[in-house]
Length: 166
Image (tube, rainbow, N blue to C red; front, side):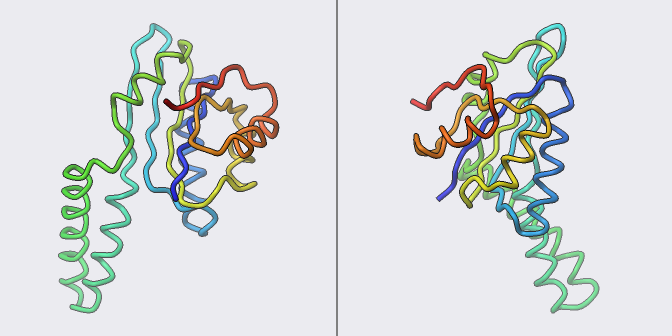
């Protein structure tokens, strides 16, 4: 089961830095990210939404592994086919985090701040909590159980606002 976590940060670059750290945790199998979106509210107010390429990258890796069996040319062809298939499936099934949902939640962000929306297969681990703490993250919304959400709030200390999913 995937959990959706949305955390806000002061500073326009903080959510990007958190995403990089979460991707590193994924490489060492401490987290299994399904999707991630970074939202930045510039100082003058406009919202910028940046989708990660987590699904495309994983499909390209699988395609490359299959391509290795076919030889050196197959490696390149397999990676390209894997990425193309992954992007097509993502667009057709829309398994990612929707832009409408992102915009709705981003409406509570202050100018000069950023937020990260991510889905993870494993429950919220100490590694994830530590990443959010390092950047003074505030929980904005989650799909966690009430108990797990309260534990995360307590771990992050001093949450400004928690909006529960509808």
